[in-house]
Length: 461
Image (cartoon, rainbow, N blue to C red; front, top):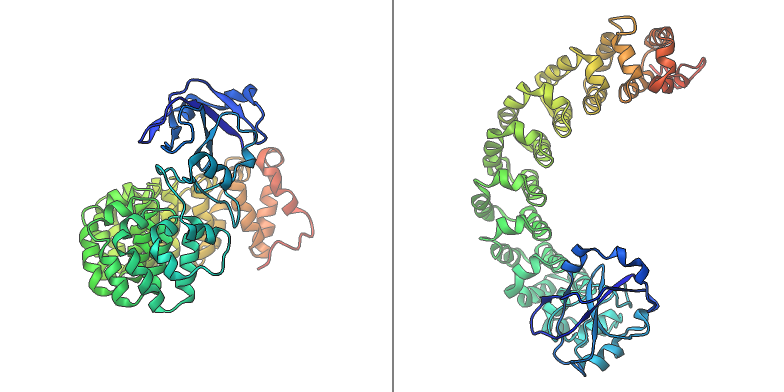
């Protein structure tokens, strides 16, 4: 561990930013790494907070705050070795207020607590030490202490998975007042999702009901969104209405969120089509914008996979009018590829005709070349039509020359050569060899091995 240490001159009763008086670097063996002080930026110093301890044996003793990737902890100045810190050392200096953590089964280097005067529960320590004698009754007495710990949450989830519904009921009884706090915690959310999955229908419904009124906030939270997705996947029909009401009018803003977009996708995947019609309506109003959006393109794909034919057409009406620019768009091309794979035959035909109108240009583009390859893979007779379009013209300005010389287009040619008729292979080979220097320089040289005489990989049809 590379530790960044800063002297702290006082002890406060609240979490406060450290006033940096001096910056030194301390290695795992306690040696001075001050020469590496450039690794400590002003931003890192600003982000460092110290957890106050009011029970220090000597409050005026200089204290170091050491920052590690999982959070800060405190140590007295002159501590000989970071790696030697253990439970006994904390007990000695903090009067039993042990700022604890673990990494793996028996280590103590992660999940650091920063609560004032925090004392680790003996039950949690026993779980860290893999004590098989720990009982669910003991854990329920300190449920939040255990559920917010990596090993503790894993222990609870294991008991829920291996037990019956009564086990889940007992855990739910203790967790019920803290459902929202657990839902937004890195480890606590695992307990909530396990309860939703394993508890009786009535108990699970009661738990999900406690999320109502907070669905939007939870959906935009990195951990809360996972709980909401699990709730949507397992919720009964009577709870679908409240979910719709909270998301209605916020679909686009949710799609723009790095976390809430997964909630919208889960709704489309898991809820009945009638229950997700409001999502389709709101997406239709900004269909092209969302098709070009990093997360919006994913929602378009889920609609193509799961929505009714009428809903798909309403969403794609504007998208199809903008298919040319979308085909070349960084994210829009994925929507066009999904139209080729899941869309109606008339939509597939419209996209293929667009590609054939400029096969050299679309096939040479970084993004639209993927659409050309998808069309050849999933649309009947598209490969033969693409080959005919490529061979329709000759010379250095032909589509074939453009594709062969292109970084991306030569992959299109390679895929064609790997699955074409013998006649098509011969014609393509003759045309490519006729290009001469165009083929031998740049990216065209990657096609030369495929044109070697007797290459049995080619002309498979």
